[in-house]
Length: 197
Length: 204
Image: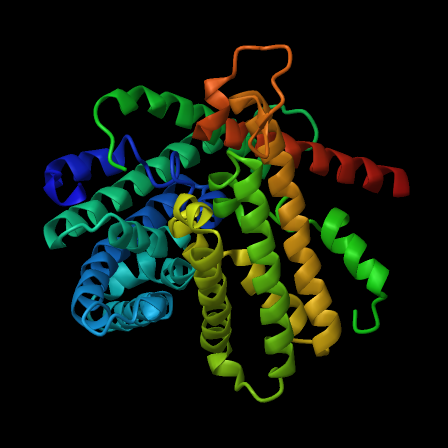
């Protein structure tokens, strides 16, 4: 059962063996559209990691103390998505006010993140697997880092391939998918270490 | 766009502007659930249901929603229909509901639904909007079934759970794993954009 898994294992597994993009296919939309430049991809990865850690923590508290006691499980989707949207909004305003440098770097990505399915996906996985608070926190952090790693790799490869001569039609999303497929195959190599399901 | 013919709406959503293959939307779930045909069919119909009804609802409400809060309203309407689908699956198809796991809830963040609401339901009357949403969802279902057909036949040697492995070939384990999904959808998008590019060149 999930509650006995060591949080460190969850952390490492969520980066490598059950990477959000390469094995769970979450957050693909922004992964594909914001990966043509390494620098912006890096910024988005950082923002996703930050939001993931915060939303997983808050959604865990909301789930445990607000949804579970009255057994309003059917309301969880609406509540989770509202928490994510509100948090992103507050984060953006707070960054704008207190850390303008960071806001200039990450601000444009924040609204995109609300509809990034990785955020809601991590929350739903956490609920389904019955993680405790520490496990959820590290699961959120690990998933964010794994996502960041994957988008950075794709962006770096796409920058190298920008001037390559390619057959018609393959340029753009099709190429990104094929690169991602090869990356996913490489990541299967990690799957022997341990799995969390 | 306002007086578009019904047949044009259907054809556009199924082929020339297929949401998955041409607009590259709704990718997450189209890859995750496509290891068997049964899961894909259920997921696709669920998405078509939500897209159709949320487009209908949002189009009917389009003149009374203040512009600034429309995203919030859209999300809430979509979430309400997703809850309906989720409860329906839990009640009537519990084993599929378990296999799909979090991906049912993730229909909320499926960009196709939001995309149709923004791009079409905002400007069009309820009935065409509902039709547009429904067929956008069915176009998605079609792609899902295509991908899962390849993956299930080669990966498990079955079709909708029935054995079709008559020549007893060795099943391809890679087809059940994530990389195959990326390769197949990559190939499909490649084919579709090459076809679109060819058509555009002919038109000139």
